[in-house]
Length: 442
Image 1 (cartoon, rainbow, N blue to C red):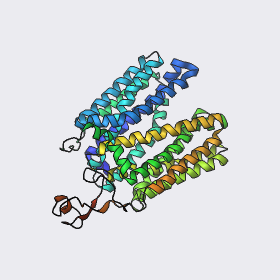
Image 2: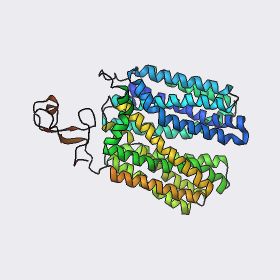
Image 3: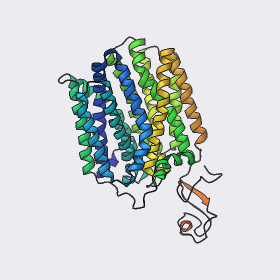
Image 4: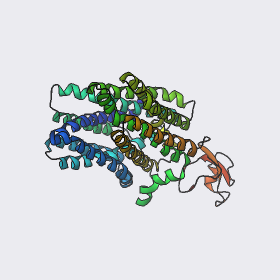
């Protein structure tokens, strides 16, 4: 599983990712304490507004940032965004009004909306072998899960010796370390092809989603992922501290159980994906989450039971989210990969923007059991749509014809079959020469 780390360029980017994740995790803890300092009992309003800004930035900014950055050197772009995020972090301790928090967090989230898809889009170029890329995806998932456990623990230890404002310094250091490792990375040279016009770069990723069957199925499963994850992230504290009457530490352990289940799936996924398709793994994960949500409405009556449910939920969650990068890689050329990853980043967060309010409002207006059931329906909808939209037979190489081309066109000679004929086969993606999926083909 750790063999991708032998590649120096990927190793540097992976280390940069971990440093940035730890910094972000410290900022999450510190931001909650800062909000309480500024607004007291109304701290939830400050955090809610910050979360809304985050979602709007992720949904609206990522495609624009990807389109605008197509002409920029990759390393310069990533380092500049890390520097911007570090500057925001060191500024946060000096704010005195909620509007200042909103302004700074807008800058931070806009930078993150540009940084994350750009980084993700480079990894397939660094690791062209599919088996190695699959392991890299699992490592990234493992890093994210470890951060969700390690950051609160690290913050708790640091707060025993320093004030929460100093956690923002740790955040800034995380981004600085990330920038340093990006500087030291040997990144793939981008294509020398002339960049497409701005409008094509802006809408190219969305066009690929609209025209590629597996990507439409991936979007449906993203809805299932958001439904299961929202129940955990929004209502764990309600279940543990309100319904069961337990402590903040118990809430942290429940979230850690979810992370543990997700890490377990990340470890076994490379071997699993060598035997089953991405579609099978992701639909299976959505089914697991739907089952947990349905069961939770009836059996989540004690803390030990909730811990068990969250471990299984985390396993299903990782099954749905980790293979997504493989589907994106199969569905794009190197030139189209940045806008496609940006579109996935935006569209998946749009699913979270649906699931988060549902999880919170239903739980508040009715009870957590009702939230379990409503989110189970949302999760099942995503799973069923994914199963129907994403064809079961989904080969990478697709036979198709080009009646508009001459028999001696060089493109036909490049096909894996039928060189010199109108019909041929090769790894199929939507691009300038292939503007629609072959009829009758998955």
